[in-house]
Image (cartoon, rainbow, N blue to C red):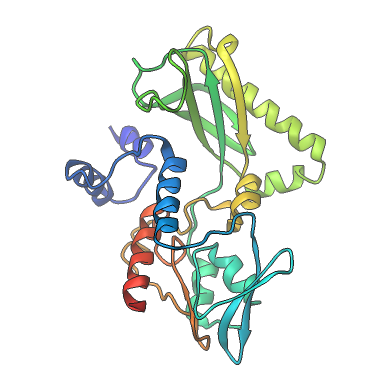
Length: 299
């Protein structure tokens, strides 16, 4: 039973998190959006556009423009500048504070967050498209390994497998999408990435190792794999600019649970932060919650 709780709920250190999740599900205040995260993002995008908003894609922010200690806009990686009456960052917290603002607006409290608070550990995500119907299997399976294996510099004693057969948009009939999150070591991948060919080779080896382990539980799966994708901690750094590859920001622990964080920076006007780096726990809920609170404050 101990192992079930630890594996099934990510090693969270309080039973309150389990009760919270079950309560939210029972209230139908939490769930899974058909079409996944892309469909959810597109729905928000279309609503925003209908309300008159504009979205600029492939427009990575390089610098937050500041004049007389007031945020006045942003400069993009291509040199373009956009002026604004107020700048709100939902981007990576470390990049926002220490790169886009060059670390000029800090105090001991904020330094303490980034020096001592734990972040969500970096992961490898292995995604497989298979010519096999997994709908009769539980959607989330923890597979204990008879012999531990080492992946990404970390010893693994079990594999957590998810399938998405409850979402008909994920795969054609008779086929399935499988994903596995595997704890990893950022330094391990940074060292390997100095040699691009070696980096790609290790990614292939990682996928092959995972598939070989799954084969033991699901005979014949190896020949049914049609699509393979491996995302390393460096992938999350590159795509989303996530500090230390932490896909959900601050780790939710008994220390950080319910801890209020400031959404403004000392000495800087017309600037605010929202998202998972100002609310421990990570993921989408803090983005929506802190974003809504920010809009209410502006109104």
